[in-house]
Image (cartoon, rainbow, N blue to C red; front, side, top):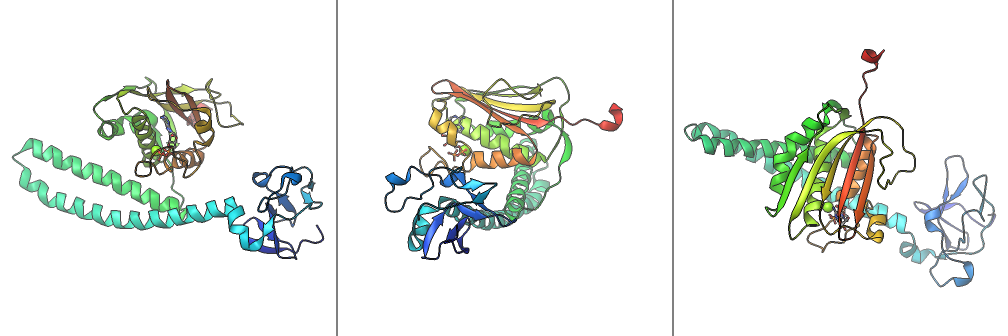
Amino acid sequence: MKNIKKRKMAEGAWASNNNDLLVGAELSSSGHINISPCFVVKNVSTRKSGESLFPDKESFCENRRLLGCVGIACRTSDRKLFNPATLQVQKMAAVGRFACGIAHDFNNILTAIIGYQTLLQPRLKDDAKACFYAAQVTTLSQKATNLTQHLLSFVRKDSVSPDLVDLNDVVMNIVSFLKSLIGNTIELTTELCGEALPVLAVSSQIEQTLMNLVTNASDAMPQGGSLVVKTGITRAACKIEGMHSHVHIGPYAYFSISDTGHGMDEKTKLRLFEPNFTTKREAKGTGLGLATVFGVVQQHNGRIYVNSRLGEGSTFRICLPLFKDEETES
Ligand SMILES: Nc1ncnc2c1ncn2[C@@H]1O[C@H](COP(=O)(O)OP(=O)(O)O)[C@@H](O)[C@H]1O
Ligand SMILES: [Mg+2]
């Protein structure tokens, strides 16, 4: 510890005084040095040039203090190669800036589309079908405007306040749009719960989640298949595989998307929600769909459950805390 000069080289990395890089150590606000387990690597004896050197977290931490350091990871000049977390943060920041720029331009185009549509509408009054099509243009353009606003606020980290909505209504309102997203070889059916599903949610974010999940389901069924959008109530701790270790016991409203597509292998399931993770060819996948879903669900204090088997299809279930009106309850 004593030979580590606390000079910050990059997020999560500190340099020692001989200008080498100690990978994976970071200074907490209380002045302690934490070892980040994501940097834990093999045994020191297997070290090659460029590998970091912590055999395990416990060897170095006592009361979260760094006790010693058995070696040095790599030269600072090489640090970019060995700090995946820093690279990831930089990459996400670049994606954010890029998305922000696109969202701005897109918004301007959408404003023009809505404007022209408003001018067009009165000229179509004798043609009921044309009027309906034109109205659809406005509705969908407004939906797209909403989404770009949320993308902008997501990037800028604005907080968006949730409303009390019925999850059934949110799903119903977007079903016809979801049908337009998928090919006509896929049959989409809905099984909506008969009870009201009050939740505190940002509807457009939930719609975004549905769109991302339905797009993935559709991509998994290139030869066609069936897709079921379901809603219901669960007391959490769903019996299917969960990705959250702490499951709150309490009523949740849920919606699920089930497909009869190619499913996923274990390796894919492990990396599913990682930003930039995709198994699709470059033009098709961005690897941001499920990362966005994850972000939205976290913001809603919700849970995601995934059940998938290779060759047998997948189910994504999103659970959101069911709203309880405490005043009317007591
Ligand atoms: N319904 C599904 N069926 C099979 N694989 C899926 C499904 N949903 C997601 N995946 C897998 O998860 C990966 C990440 O999804 P996502 O974050 O939406 O990125 P993208 O769709 O751009 O690849 C996909 O590339 C795919 O391998
Ligand atoms: Mg996707």
